[in-house]
Length: 156
Image 1 (cartoon, helix red, strand yellow):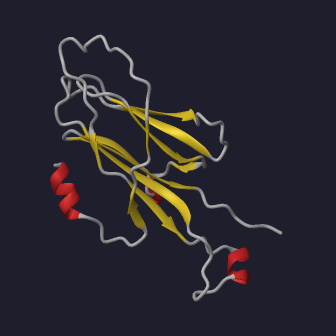
Image 2 (cartoon, rainbow, N blue to C red):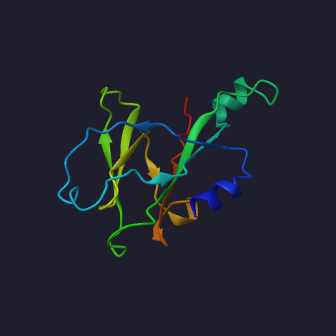
């Protein structure tokens, strides 16, 4: 499935491959003597684009666009060999280790034989409506978490 997802690629110009993985401290697992722990395969994308708010409309144009901003993320993590396929992987947010308020760590955990995996993302409020692109599901060994950020409206 991982190879098929890579071969499929993306037609969207606003999505880029995202590999900003954070090193986690190694911890001994209770199941480590039975199964060889390994990291899951993943195919993550960051959605970037221009924010054409009132301020940017008055100060920029198409020839001189504003800087691109992160608008959302798409995490696809492949857990093909889970021992208990009925156990759904979990995710949670943690504070950034360097205490930067603009970033946070999103951590994914699934159970044996996979180790936890974490990524550094932008700290913003999520849109959790399915109509706005939020998706969190675990189907056929693939955990998908897609979300977009709330837009910030410029006010004088």
